Length: 179
Image (cartoon, rainbow, N blue to C red; front, side, top):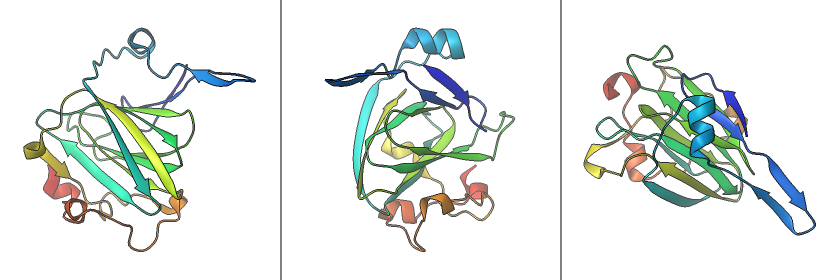
């Protein structure tokens, strides 16, 4: 696996080695030993989630201060722009965001304490992710996707003026009100 740092402290883009032959391909997407040795991360994942989204759907930016979740995210089909925001007050990258296009075999590790979301660029996208703690709806919060303080650049996704949002995501809070 190739591990590349992102702008945010503790977040990584992961490119697994892909082995191809006339039957298809194989790659290892998660190996606790590699993450422990190379990155010093000893995350134990407890749940795997999958969502299918249509073009122009924006999900997020979600987080839980109580029971924070580290995430390992990838797209098994389609294309998204993945966005994550550092909400850890003690982090050197607090209040910063990063984004990565996700297609194919690339994965992103997002540490606990970050808000996370994605925008679907293809007709449909199958988005999958492992989380380090369970979902607690009573602690779930949403950061406003278009918060003026964060000024997230969604332009590479050719985002329409109004992406398709859930009612929950329409009620997102500003960065200042989220802390």
